[in-house]
Length: 481
Image (cartoon, rainbow, N blue to C red; front, top):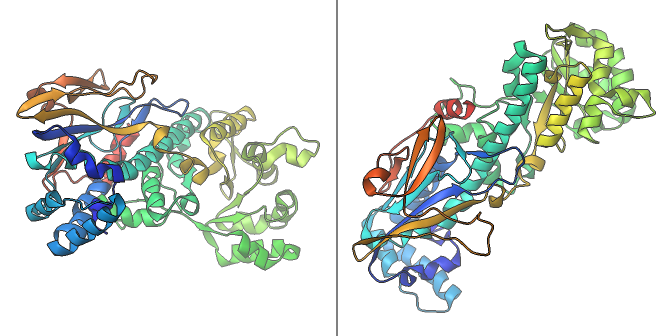
């Protein structure tokens, strides 16, 4: 598809709607509001993917490198029918003749955590006749970039929580946290690109992921090599179909066969296909010798019910249910008590819960384990689409807004500030500079062109070329700060 068709239909008439003599439109991308409790900063991530995949690959392949008559005819066909007019496509022809996108993007480094209401990048046309192109690209930019930023931010919040509890209950095992949040979201995302973008955001904070295409995407877009750097990883794991195929009457036999199939390494077995409590109190004791003698860890995976109660136990008449998974595993397999006084399960056994985990539930699980005297690191949390798909562009209020134009050679600072709004939609005004003060990123608007050129925003794309080609390694380092 001609990438110029990847836009909102109302953009088609904006070229004629700007004042006559307009030669420049300057816009910025900003998270304007947080709708997630406890988060007041947003991780910037995904621009390099967008530039390589869309501004370079798709624009070159599906527009500039195709015959002019072909792309122009395609564009005019759909726009004429859509608007019911004989649409003037002169500006589209001129763009094809130019052979590249006359756009400059300045951005802070990806992986940087930015306070709410601070712009992440700016966009401006580099040739006066293409002033219309800046905000024409808004729809495409917005549809791609809000999600990796959002998922990277939420993943970092999970990691902050898991790190805090690990330091409080198992500080010598702090490196395990990178595996404690595991991405299970792919099947529940809105599409494959959505799952990859979100999965890459998750992988800035965690190594555990079942979203396999993230590994390839990071090699393609962020200069990594999976043979030399840990991008994502996972373990052998079952699903309900495997357990069902083994039959309810011989579930213990299925466990035994799986342990024999995988004599070494971590093996995760979904354990609530029928009766989780029977698995924990009847089948695992029968298999205890095999489990303890095995060169690896068996991980029990509950997959239904209230995750906090299932993992930590609850007020229940049934004493088994009241204990919860971790305490039942401790009762059977034991473990050690670390220097901080918290119980750590035998390394031959563990647990993972991967259904309906949220930031709030993750916090509750860690806190209740701590209150019971167990280290938070006794459980891995599978973070799925319940976390990553239940978001929108408005989760952090992302928007791209124009703040400066030039008309007939004169600069004009522009802004929006709706009287009917609560202040969320109020934009910056004029040119923008980002700078750091006492470790905090701050923005200043209404600056001169000279000031705008001196700030933290660096040119990453200009006239069809990628200027800064960042690496996963460096982005992860920034995200971890």
